[in-house]
Image (cartoon, rainbow, N blue to C red; front, side):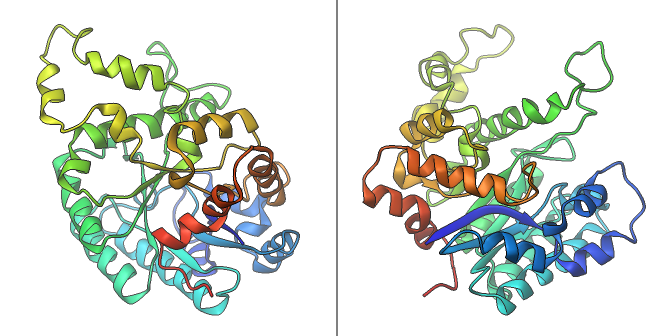
Length: 337
């Protein structure tokens, strides 16, 4: 079985509510209109039927809930989204054996409550968190109760990048050009969020913390020479503060913490990238995911190309089983036989 653990959908109830929201500069309305499988289940099922023994653990598509509404509105939007995702699992368990809960990260108290509701009442497999909260880093103290609650519920975090064109490529410019905010900015976002989480000491504080980093750990595997020997010299390049003190507070090397993250296979058909990520994380830490339906074919392309890549890497049958389904079964509360 191929369990696609990082692919996106917009439940009909959330889509209907979203259409009533004022325009906020996000592109989700246009994207959902242009990609039928985002909302239309018949279109989605026709795509899924092309791939035998294939199912999806669904999560909300970007932008984050907190980008769609303020601290008062976001909790309502998260509840609508999670109710819709949970309904998909109930109605179509063979298609969707699990879902990932959305959180209103701009309202910490509501996010903590929604974790309990989504996991305990709705049966969420985990929660999705973006690499920043409207520009704020995840290691701010305000977000600590959210990580504490996730650790208490012992569910994985799906870590998704978030950055818009308003994050300029150069300080002399006002906006990023040529969609480079996505091409290069999103992998950077994920990588920095992973680093900030480890330097915050969350893996020491919450030993069972499980975080699935989207797009195969982003930049981390390719730059392992920098995250390894480079960060072993933490502080050597900084004069204004003693970063060696930060390193001494950690129980392990930064590199060892990076290897504690899980990663998915969503490399958009890049076989060399998949080999690099597998070499870094190992088969026990990698899960099958496509990031469908955002490919040029609006659904099947990334699924097909991801399967091609997994099949193209030389590995044992046992490791291929782990990637396709074994690791997902181990980490998540899935409704699977």
